[in-house]
Image (tube, rainbow, N blue to C red; front, side, top):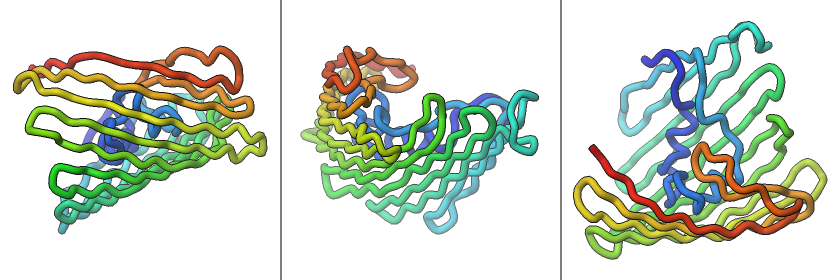
Length: 229
C-alpha cells in the first residue's frame, strides 16, 4: 500500500516498460504525443503480489474539495503479465472535475538476445486544452556490448477531434555506462506537427520549447548523464 502524493501507476508501465527510451528523454515519442497525469495527490494505491506472472495496481485519488466525482478526484488501474522474454502491459486512467481526462496505455515488449523491441498504443480524451487522440509507438534497443546501447523509434498520433491535427516523431538515442554508477546518454527527436497541432519535445515533466507556429516541426538533441548513489 502507498498513500499520499505519488507517481500515477500509469506512469510505471509508461516509464520504460513500453518504450526503448524509457519515456525519460525528448526521444520518447510515446511520452511526447500521449496524454497522462504523471502525479496524483491524496492518493491510496494497492500493489498486488506477482502471481504466475500476473500483477496489478489500483489507485484512487481523493477529492480535495474542489473536484467533482463522488469523492474521487480520479482512479488508475494497471495490469501486467510477464512470461520469460515476453511482457504485456495495460493501464487506464480516469480523472474527474474540470478538465477531466480518460486515457489508456498498453502494449507488449519482447527480449531476443541483445535486442529488446516494444510496441505500444495509447489514446485519451479530455484535459485542458482538450486532447482527443490516439496513436501507436514502435521502438527497439540493441545492446552492442555490455556497456553501450542504441535505440531507434517511431510514434504516430491521430487527431480524433476532426481537425486533422496529426503528428509523428522519429527518434534515436544511445547510452554508455562509464561505471556502475555513472551513465552517459544522448538522444534526438524529430517531431512533425500537421494542421494546427502544437506538440513538442518535452521529455519527462518538462514543458519543452513551444513550436514556432501551429503545425511547425520541432527538432532537438539532448545530452546528459545520470549518477546513481
